[in-house]
Amino acid sequence: MWVFLKLAARNLLRNKRRSAITFVAIGLGLALVLIFYGFIQGVDKQFTDDFIKAQTGHIQIHAQGYREKARLMPLDIAIQDFETVTRRLKELPGVRSVAPRIRFPVVVSTGSESIGVLGLGIDPQAERDGIVATKITQGKYLSGERGYALIGTKLADDLGLKLGDLLTLMATTARGALNAIDVEIGGIFTTGYSQYDDSILILSLADAQRLLRMSGQVTEIILMLDSTDQTERVARQIQQGFSEDGLEVQTWQELGAAIFSLLEARRQLMAILSMVVILIAALGIVNTMLMSVFERIREIGTLMALGMTPGEIRGLFLLESAILGAAGGLMGVGIGGALLKYFSVVGLTITQASQFVNLPIGTTFYAEFSWGMLAMFFVFAEGVAVLAALYPAYIASKQEPVQALRHA
Image (cartoon, rainbow, N blue to C red; front, side, top):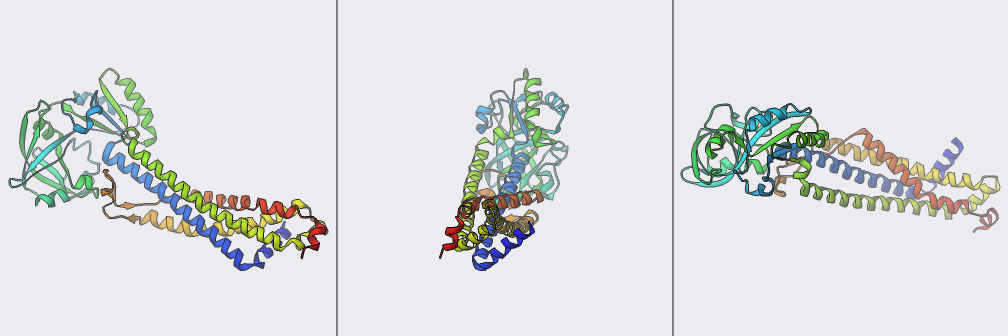
């Protein structure tokens, strides 16, 4: 085996330029595919986590009929006696937190200016680890004290507001009447998500119920689980255990079906681009090996005359290709892995990325890095290199010794 390895290495070094071009093509192609894959995996994971944490939770529960009118944020389709429902949900295995909410349109008036925003009534204790609670930049998070509100940095700037300013909130109640309350700005948050920072006002659940006259009612209950993998199991348990309560259960996959179908289409597009890169690298290997076969026909005849079998000839050319694949694979894994490691820590920042889609997503995206991924792609590159050399190796093994020796 050592003799074959030494012979294959010498054959590759005969034409250093051609071997180097093939080696670089494999390496750069693999690095490009690896970076594509790493970013797709990382961004998809981050997008899913952000979508769950900031938008839907793992599971959402509404009163029967709410789903059809969800865009209108109907207040007359509400969960009654939500405290009992919440208490029962907390007892389910795998449930980390249960957060009742009221989502409603509200007009914010500063006295000189009015603007319509999305109102969100939350249980401050249930969402103390939520995306807003951990991003307060001025003031403090909501407590049990009534009469305070949280707003985003951009909304505060647009309205010229600061901590301690008073706002008048006007909203239509569940029965269609108009009601208003005064609140003080108790905190300003900066989440980095434009959908939060630009257009959401957050109240305690008690204040939202007072404004909307919805005592003992909420429009939705958000469940966060210990693991995303538990979503389907917990959803089935809720559907079975709460079948008589008139509740609708939706998972994050259902709530984001349209968005995740777009992500799947993007993954398929990236897969096609990756296959094109792989095909180009494979064609480079085929070209290199075929040229090597035609240049070495007399040599192949000599080797056969000395007793080398067709199978050994095939093995020799496959070994040469395997060496090229290993060298290119190491180059690609080295370059691609180093870049993925860097971007998995530092990330890639795209300013105001959340403006491109109507969803709360961050502006810094991180690649996914793992040693297992690098090993998988190295083996993949080696496999492609060997497969690409099968035809040239077959051509080489089919040479007739006498005719090969006469080849000019």
